[in-house]
Length: 366
View (tube, rainbow, N blue to C red):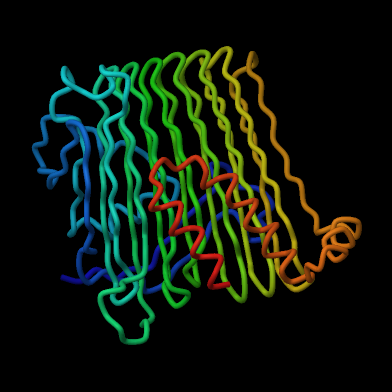
């Protein structure tokens, strides 16, 4: 099984600043050889199985847009996807005041692999899904130049709530493609917590369509770029329904010669009267050699809406460094502690203690 192709990914919904060449990203000779291995744990009535072509749960997976674009669909079409769902919505943990949960650990970095997960939340159910992309620890040999592509699609029926926690801890030699798309019906919600902490090259996209009235999207993303890492991100929220709300918060740390490009778009479509969208990025720069690029974008096809966006960029101030130095903390350790505090503010949203401990262990290695 092999799929190799040139790809256009992370394309802005409307081109801007063409001369800066940031509207999209081109990837060449991307190749998939096999399906990535994963381990899964479930509580409540959550199930996971291969998605069949005549799936009776929901036939519109192909219509759910994703942040990286249609080329990821093509790249992984020979692999297929796994369906995560509530087996009996009349007997869910949600009806007992708790969420049904799934924890998936995807190992990557030794080959060119693809994993697909489609999350289906029935009407008025509540589903927690944690997906960790981690280096393959089953082999003691030195890590190879691998590629791991993961696509996640979410469909939330009326009144449903999906919490997705996605953590990337791959080896620095690995190229990671992580593609997310979601569709919300009336009064449903998708809540996303996302951490990018490894991989030499990271290309990731999120696209959520707020179709139903009163639907919501809330996300918090954290990242650290160090050495010569490359991070290329594209987040889009499309407001279709009336009184829909979205909030995107991104917190990042850049050091050494890292490169980061973040595109954050709020798209108010005609008819989304009363919609509200907010997008913020906070970037801590530790050094002088990194490259930081940010594109905040608001598209407005409806008058009675409220949209806010912006970015805060800066380094450690002298007063903070002096205060920490007076307590015997070196500048290097101070930078590590402050970077960890920023990531902790995001990882604290993850309900699985083992995953939070794994994130904390990452900082012991940097």
